[in-house]
Image 1: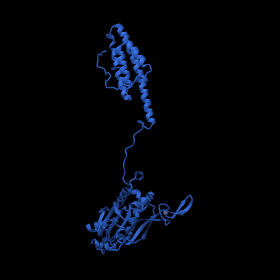
Image 2: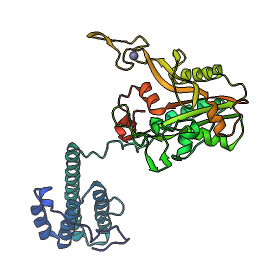
Image 3: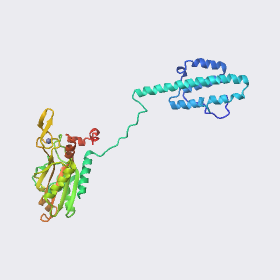
Image 4: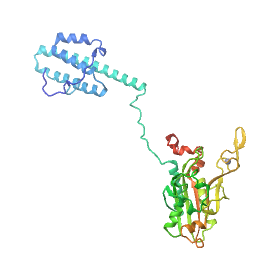
Length: 383
Ligand SMILES: [Zn+2]
């Protein structure tokens, strides 16, 4: 066989398959062609084998085009050569070519449905290439970072700028300059991680006040976010590291009323406009007077009683008191001002501090503080 124009041809590299399973009469067809025309028999054998050997629909398409394509397929081109042949040979070969064309088309169709059945079987076992793809994993900010960002936004709007100070701190900044007496229990190695004598992991973010005040004269309005460390026995509500934000406002004639107004604005922003709050006197070395702010319990609404299907019982969140402590605060102690070189007769100020984990636990009803540090995505991706 010769062709007048270059045709696609059968690539010698195409892998062969066994056509017998696709065409029960394959051997008979082959024998028929052998007796008719040796060349046609060779074309049919090779064509049938490469169609049977197509590994996927795309390969089958390519091989079908090479053999049976209407413009440049091998069969089409051979049929185009017929007019140049003597009459009796033209008839014989024309009939043979049409048989080859029909038989190859049948094998191609059989192979195609066989490939489709195999794809369906794979899909049934779990691999389905037609399913939509999975969305790429997109991260998010940690829930504590979200809350910190919210608080910094809030205080930024009230004129506070951020001040950060070292997590490894000198003892005087963590204790002495903040008016902790030398025998205060917090200084004990049982409560504080000492790196070496006089150097420790800060137990609160308040050393930042001292550093900020030593750096510049009042007025001063700063917030101090960061991680702090305490040698706590770890349990559901205590970790040996957690996060705080302190705030400090120093100027002339700053009063307790200013503190109450600031804390009320904070509580409304974080817990909602209707939240009830109270200030309770508490001792901290670095403030005088000192107070803690409580908010009405988020679970029982401040009643101390939890209503359950089994009846009324004492609220587990506030332990029946109706109130939850959310932060510590107070007017800056005159000794702290003296320690940083401010004149306590000239300036006054207030300070407050809160734990981010506690805010998150109350807001989202998280019972277990350790979850915030375990980096379990099943927990973190809920926020
Ligand atoms: Zn309660």
